[in-house]
Image (tube, one colour):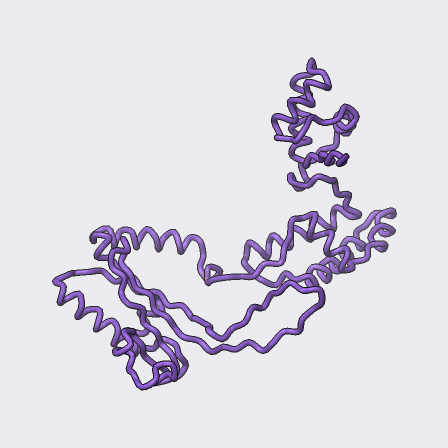
Length: 299
């Protein structure tokens, strides 16, 4: 016979259960257990002893992670609170300096500060703290912290600047139909790169990153009714994969630059061809450019 799976409520569910019990004191334990099973979609009602035990523990779970099913007793609440405040501040400022080593070092600094203004009983607790890798792991688990990669260029722009820019852009583009508003963006395709994360039993040494790449320029109008053929920019004048054929013969747009990135000459040449195409179609279109593209045109 298979043993029944243990039912554990998280902090938020415990809080809701206690509030419901306080609001409906006339409910029996059996009725309350059935209500909890329905409200929290449990596989079966809570056992009477488990329910009674939960109601007896009138602990405030408001500071806990609401999804946690077990409580966390901090050895030094002040230290952890200041450490979390520092991590949150770094996140707000979008400063990607928070590593495991940085957290442990910051914890040492906060402990030194707290020791200088501690009560007679506090130093014993603080001195006992060992900021080991195990402590770091548990601290991250309880605080819901993860190691995450930074991505994109969003950290370079302030939120207010984004909102103002959107309003200006909407005002300018409102004069054109969506089919007549075009935009180009560039992305790098690192075709020789290998994964830098893997799942294995043992640690695998990393390899030198291969930075061979192609720049791909993607252009379309706002309603995506017209997609301009991709423009590829590489380093080689005649890539080996082309053989003896030209890019035109292969049906692609390809250009080369010393570093494989878009430059003034290539962008100017491309925008002139785009302009000729729009003229031949008898169209007046809008083509907003980024700050980087405007610099290329102004050089």
